Image (cartoon, rainbow over all chains, first blue to last red; front, side, top):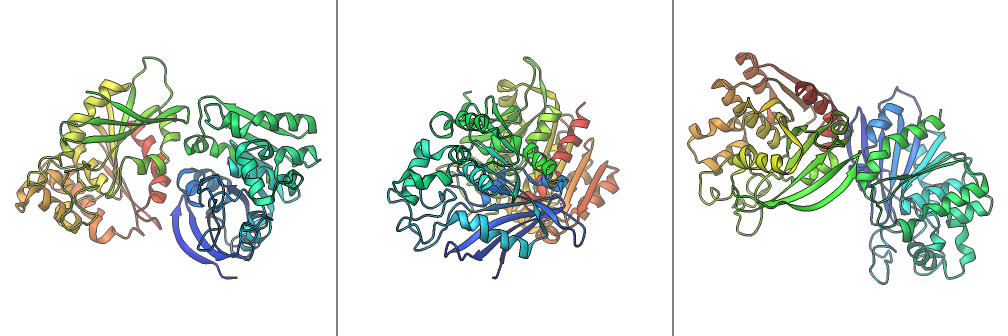
Length: 280
Length: 280
């Protein structure tokens, strides 16, 4: 397995890198960003996974997320994968919309043609990229947290709930908490997994929790001026599910904030510190 | 004078806005970004001007500069103008290069055809935009600092040195310190001001200082892995001029850092605090 270095820049005493490798899961080249804080030779660092939202690549949070100061202070590696396979031959949304296909992998392993071959973002994030990380970077894989934004918040919650032994902490900005109950999710899950809703439950944080899944701790921030709040995000569904399940969770409505990286960057340092406290 | 609001986003408790107005100086619509920290009704805040480098608009530092946390803490307004006039009829570099014309106004008032009509970034920054700021935002114009990056570092140094009663503090990331002695500057100053070098001295920080100009305090950070260091930036020329002039200045070489916003964002909070201390 060869890792190609696309760029490295010194930042906050560490190194912000962008890397590419040929993914077995997606059958494509995949690009991801990693920030490695300054550290002692041989030292292994905790790792925080960040899953991005619709239309994003690895670059959005790298440029606008403002995580490096907090990660440097907490000595935590920050990994930002892409949001879908890309490249010639990778099928896109038949309607050409932003909410399915390229940039919209929804962190599932697709079962439906023509998407099943490449759209394997679940296995890519859960199985393949961790091996790449462990082989190439000074990560302590016993100390992992996961977070995400919007579609990536859905990814972080579902991956966290399915892998509670791997992730000590799960946080999200403005997550899609119940894709099976909202338009973005219904389109994506039907498209990737087929019309049978029974196949969707493993990719729905609320449904997973109703089915008994738990994770150590959850933190969610949601802006109350978010244009997608009522139709697509619906954090009250997560709140209700956590209460019913006895799941430890802090779900906060932040007045005046929208769905953008201006919102994310405002609370990023606090999320990074929250994860760091849970990885000690 | 009408100010059009293009966008506002809540961030770090304040508001990041983007605005447009018709500039009398440039004869074009000009776009700029302003961050207003949370503040009490009627309270006036100090203001920090940020001048961007070649190819940039108001947006680069707004997205990648990581200044909002520090400005919110210091209660300082942050203003980021564009780097040149733009629009139909604005003449660009005849060679089509990035280092002259659009995105490369060099903060001068051009005297040469066909640039003299629109390329009036000196008067735009020194005279016109301050009036717009004072009329539309809660700024305390007695407390102003100015900073910039690369070409914008040149702008901050020269505008600061020409207006020591306006700006209490001047800082720069990787500035062009002596445009009259480096290729970027020679091309720009000749193109905008003509071949007679006597006309360039007012737009060259080192020459200004040699001519007696002083400002209260200067802070410069320069990465030693900056690809433009030796040919275009040459901070030692500024260091020598400051020493000869008895100009108070801190000029630091930062090991491993390049010319990018990964470098700028690393030291941004420190610069913001440095300005804030000088505006008390």
